[in-house]
Amino acid sequence: MKYESHKKSNSKLYGVRSRILSKCYNKNITNYKYFGAKGIGVCDEWRNSFTSFEKWALNNGYTKNSFIK
Image (tube, rainbow, N blue to C red; front, side, top):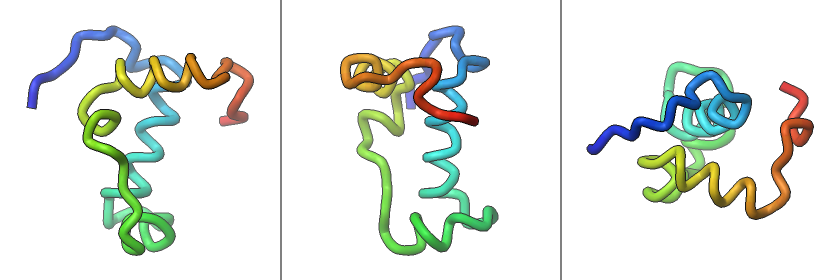
């Protein structure tokens, strides 16, 4: 896997994506049973590229106030 250099790992949206990925792929977290264990995953484009996820989110109405956490 190629690593991106986006310098946004402290951004709110990066945290949102990280939590989504954890729910789908980290068997050690509580919410995995509701997502990953049921076969829910993330497309390879978003899983492998924060920049692709960010671009989609911004083009589809994401704002810094879109998520509380």
